[in-house]
Image (cartoon, rainbow over all chains, first blue to last red; front, side, top):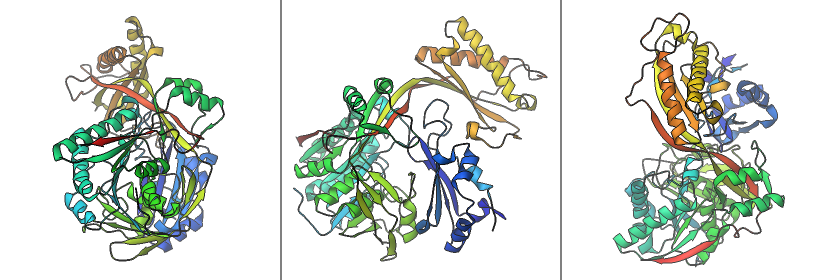
Length: 103
Length: 457
């Protein structure tokens, strides 16, 4: 077992338009990317659970050219609307850091 | 009129007009004899405020500095200058602001050029008729559009594709200033106007719209892309930066839901099969992109006024208060409600919210950590109300209640909060949200985006 924060090279979030936030997790080597990907832990259900959204609204894409896994989730509050806390969506990645990866 | 070519060299000067770029990078870029020079002008990322208010994202001074260097380099060499989403949000006032800068610079520098302005503001009555005709649908994770939402919008723009740019270039424009456009559309339009295919043209646009975000180190700087029949090459013109296969591939993750599937007006840019190859230590070739034609869609973006905002900032270092912060803030809310009702602003006329930094100020209700151990908490007190007068009044009474209200076990009897500033009340002004974020099937790619030409000198 290892925490994602100890495996990833990058773990970041950002708006993908005003109604979604996208979370990118990148790895240093192809070997590590493949190992994490093959555990299947970073799936739509995990994003849904961590962010309190419906898994059918989550889109997860593995992107080998950048050794990255991308998860896109709906925002609870659209960017800049009443009750928003993060206009750019740039600080919504933290729940991913403690995800345990069985490798 | 653009002449057909086997290769199209596109020079993007920065990420957004007004973000700046080193002048030396532009000079190096010009030495590569680009067919077009341009820059993206905007983004939805900073929020709906700019679309709603009509204000530009960047200062006039910063935009003028960038535009002057571009026009001085391009116009005497007969290189067309193309800018999409002018002024940040790409509404009519934003584009007119950039157009007025272009005229000023022409006068000051003695430049002459034919300028095309491509408009993107959409009439509410037209949007409602499209809604009635069933031509509008919602994007993923966006609620369906209603006539009420359309009516409430302050401004609605359409996001143009590549075709209006091609038409403006065909119309002999030396300078094309466009209102809201897909970030990549201006570049795709330039390359396709020289006869290059859609797939590499759109892919190049994806790279160019963000300056040197695809390079390492990243930054606001000039990027040169060469579009050929089945691939592109990208290279930063500043020798301090380089593109690597990884840096270019990584850029595909930037601010989008999918790194491989990009929906654009008239088609899907599919980058699933892309291959990234270093052709020098600073330049990368990308091949394997596909353009899959789709029924033509135009995205609509609308901003709705949600109220005037007033805020104050304060903090507590009191452990007794911190241990009961939720019930304390509820009692503040109740007391403010009673007092505001007393002067005629009942609670349904305003929102009073607390951003509690040190607890859940960043993630709000989604914060997974419920037990916190901060020795101090920072609070941004926010009031939103339809009128500025009401917002100020409710904030002012909140600022009276917050330091003085009693709570169980209170020892800090002179004041519950430290206010860092006097005056402590801050009027933020009108605020907006994105109310329209939908797609419409237009009559054709041009009908929503009329073009005007003018001779500037």
